[in-house]
Image (cartoon, rainbow, N blue to C red; front, side):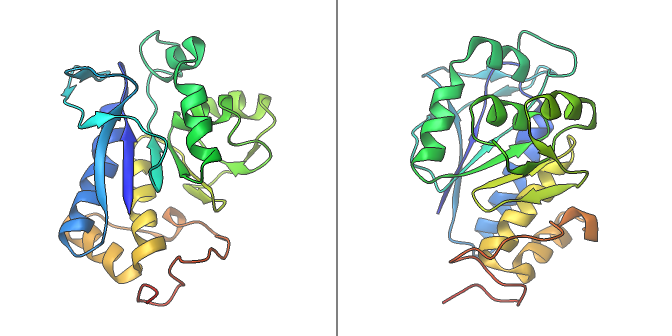
Length: 215
């Protein structure tokens, strides 16, 4: 499977690097996945909110199995960041296209706001950074006070460090809890119960709570 993490000017670095590290380590540990950083158009680099420069792998194409959408700059209403991207609107139809073509959409922190404004969240349950939940509620979203929320075709997480939990859940969902726990152990990251969805839906092709991925 292919997992794309979108990056844009002003993106929160940890929203990107947390999932990237988890997914890369999962691939090294045997998960049949590739992960890459993608931009809306061809650029040499993207600068995050703290000044870290990302060198993207390729330009976004709406055919990944999973699209991870990080946030950044929403609460402070920065022109560079998720707030600015929503105002400009360039990412919104691209994300909607990917969702319409079957990609699972995954929002990290205020990346959920991009998904909501793209019309992807709708009446599904979702979460985001605690300071952006009011904005999400005003869009008619059923906001959940949970670390990770899995609605099948939409997975969201609340808070900057929650990108690690979201990525570990994606690994668990497709490749089993043993592999996800192994990645967490390698990162010396303590997983805890609230970091998993409380009631994930039954999803064809995904792992069950049992230890092993489907044949």
